[in-house]
Image (cartoon, rainbow, N blue to C red):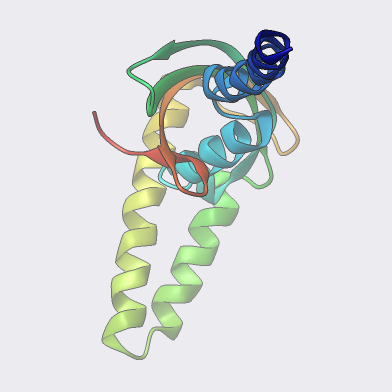
Length: 152
């Protein structure tokens, strides 16, 4: 009877191992990927005139157990025009009272120039227009799940 007990104990242990491996192999969840895309988008010049929708994972490459490169596709939805953004920057500049305000206005002005340059390169848009974007993001496994990681 001792061998049967050991056999059953080992047999019952395998599903636990499989569950652990499935969790490890599954990688980041759809929510973690979407959060990472939105975090990365904050640094995009278009972040001042649009937002991200419909994020989907198209592929991934594991770089060890704790790091993965995820290929994503999402829609960039334009919320306002470059002219509206320029008006906001101009108003901020006029109202700037402290050095922090001036610094933030300069940063916005730089983003405005970058955004305008992108519209020269990629074409004009109207509010409500959508563009499909394909990109890669790097995620690192942390104690609290997968998180966006800049650089390589």
